[in-house]
Length: 143
Image (cartoon, rainbow, N blue to C red):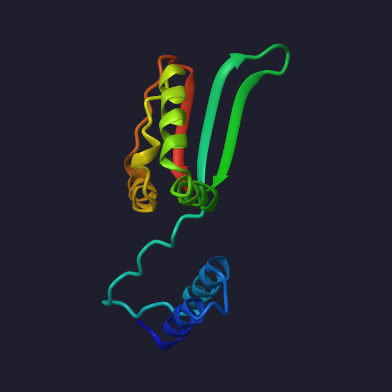
């Protein structure tokens, strides 16, 4: 770990910067590093910041022509939601799980952990979405 990165993490530990500020500083440090010479290891992919879902269909929607949906969700929002779920009292989680199950959403909120979101983000490159319409496409990816 280089010295600048260590300093940013130390400032975060001391409470001098927020987690978001530390992330931005580390991203800036990574952008400033010179390209590695040939024959050295390749830098890992930058940490994704957004979950994007794009749905395109050739069906005409009214008189507007082909339909297109483009959703961009900040991954920081998902991470914050998981952290907030850990603050909900167990009795409330039980009620929320029951309501979700009644609505057909089989998610157990008691099992949500921050590391699960990170694992999900890591595996989003491998995701495949099947749809029944040959003239429509769905893409789910991180950027």
